[in-house]
Length: 407
Image (cartoon, rainbow, N blue to C red; front, top):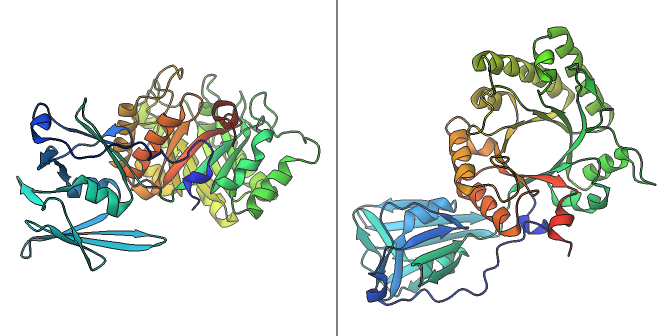
């Protein structure tokens, strides 16, 4: 997997400028303390507290939000956290009431001993940040602790459209890129010659075929993306016509195989706004099942790109689709008018609803840079990390440089 710092728009949130975490108990008592993880509130079973000038936080809640394994030994009154990264593992052990912790077996002094408050182990936040690479800061005016999660490897998927030749150089930054060069037309037929999704013309020596080949050679898996909306019932026509559907699936798999793609990205939108939602879900499941049955023997992976479950379109059965596809992308955007960053609370809800039906290692969080800024993009990446999702999907190349510049 490719590190997020390779992406221009997804540079790690800066950890500079943090203030000290030590505050006076009398000051903290004036109001409750809020914890923000990557710019979004993190719920706690017990509110953070300030003891002897040190901010104490629930250890398990933060650790698990950062993907750190935590174990509790009741007999020894010890809590052990294990963080495994490519660079190696770190094991931290703390004992209730003791100001001595161990880090990979070496003793480390704590400013305040871990405390048990209503069944929750509280530890110094500054110690946590030092040991697990998280940035921590304290805002006295708002009584807010801000935590920036450490960089980590995530699966990164990029979408590439026709007008993206200027950002071909970004393709190697992604684990996979979906090339949006095909769709279903008004009659439900598969085509590469529509007015909005089409097979691009060459730009000098740069051809669509060479882009696909170079992506593969650089270790980025190229996917043929197939798009459709349902404004003119073009998708419905295909789902309701078994012969047309079979012809469509055969054409998709043949083109993907012929042109050297490694997978298919299925972006068929607009189902279930009205009508019989259960029927539509069943029809779409059948389409994906038939496509998977033909794609897999051809050595092609399958990603299904879906509207969020807290959006307007209810024609998508996440649970069944996850059993048929290699992974699902949650298009957690277009909740509003896309003139400003998508509301984090809605994105959070969309992820949690998906997790009720799908394993986290099959879910990819879609982020549209069209409406986001660097801060809001990083907050959404933080949510993907918090829930342990497989990765993120960026819509799209061709917009990155125009909104974020190059460096």
